[in-house]
Amino acid sequence: MSSSHMNSSSSSSNSNNNSTMDLLTLENPVFCCYLFWATVLVVKMLLMSLLTALQRFRYKLLGLVPLALRRKVFPNEEDLFFKNIEVQFDDPRVERVRRAHRNDMENILPYFIMALIYVCTNPNPMIACNLFRLAAIARIVHTLVYAVVAVPQPSRILAFATMLIITFYMAAVVALRTLRFI
Amino acid sequence: MSSSHMNSSSSSSNSNNNSTMDLLTLENPVFCCYLFWATVLVVKMLLMSLLTALQRFRYKLLGLVPLALRRKVFPNEEDLFFKNIEVQFDDPRVERVRRAHRNDMENILPYFIMALIYVCTNPNPMIACNLFRLAAIARIVHTLVYAVVAVPQPSRILAFATMLIITFYMAAVVALRTLRFI
Amino acid sequence: MSSSHMNSSSSSSNSNNNSTMDLLTLENPVFCCYLFWATVLVVKMLLMSLLTALQRFRYKLLGLVPLALRRKVFPNEEDLFFKNIEVQFDDPRVERVRRAHRNDMENILPYFIMALIYVCTNPNPMIACNLFRLAAIARIVHTLVYAVVAVPQPSRILAFATMLIITFYMAAVVALRTLRFI
Image (cartoon, rainbow over the protein chains, first blue to last red):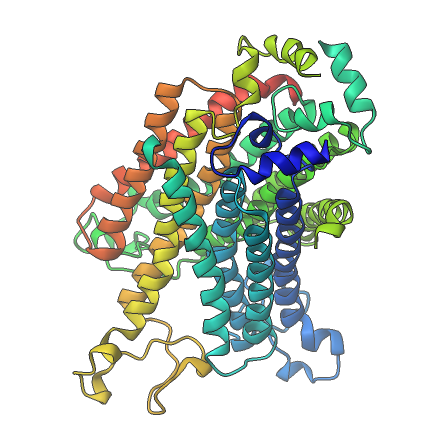
């Protein structure tokens, strides 16, 4: 089986039946690579929720700061576990994590769809796998320099642009392959 | 037909060729279960838009409140159907629905991708279907206790954590299966 | 192997065998049409990020406005390339683009999943392709009348409702097909 797969994936562009059928299965190494790195990015995104919660609870968990100085950053009234604090929306550290999280949603979620579509067009395995790796690492760097420690520009813009350009490249490849179905 | 399918899905973990090919088709009951519950969650998310609009229009539709007291909660100038009201951004009930909606996007959209990926790894049908059911019901409960009626904690945190843990479990399963494609 | 698969998928839901197996491949014209229009929408969404950045930089790039009047609309301190400006969050033009972007995320991302699921149920090709075209064009119109030039209502509500109704229709089709897997 593996030898037949080698053969079919070498004739990339005019996909014969075998190669097309294997695209979205675990026999396709490109798809497996997509699965792995998409999983990494999903976990990274979900950790942003926990990072936000951590920022909200930080001083409370430490318990070292007097009540009057504690950060009061819960958006809903039922979230106030202490009676002497109030609803608040504009803590700078919490808002920074939330902007990073929103940026993740704006860029990573369309990327998931775009990369899955890209796998369906049977791309060159070497190019595709390296794009998946590069995009995932770029977004992890983006989170580190945005939400964890605020590094001066242009570190964040470069990390941001990396995934953006990769997604546009995938879009161009797919659009050219499917243009006659407009 | 069903007997041949039974055979292929019984050898779940070391997926032979037949079973792998059926994963993303309507012959795979796990995939059908995913389709159904993903559809339920998509509908739930889209209803959040309508719920936001409903909150914005509430008093206007009733038409019982004097103009001076009506809620003026439209973010864009062209949305003002009445001339004597102004653009406003901070109505607490509207903002609560919007936070719930944002939380949906942060959690449900990555879950869609993660669960689809999880289906591709040919999981145990019993476990997978129950995870899909549990995750969808947890998010419906989350919306009810967050956006519809504000129930005291920890109801919302439990509903939130349920889907989060399910997604992390799926991520762990997929990552272990695809680790050699890093 | 292929013949046994042929048999099993022929009894699917009167979808004959060939068509079911080809659903998520480039041999399926409906899937290709989905790929093309999903790509268009992904590109449109990513351009929103650039449009936001453009709005932030607008006067700086022109360089014609005195410093005191320049728009100071960067949310993070490290983004301030000029020393005499401050962090700001409430520029109306930037916020309008961001609301449009958020609305995209709320509607287009669930649509991607819903439409992909819809393709898996082997819909009527004529209906499906036209729905994909109509939904994509409606969202492009939505962006134009929301973020680029502010057109009076109900233009935006109509564009918004078009995709919403299409997504609900797809959800209804899928739910009816997969109801027994609840």
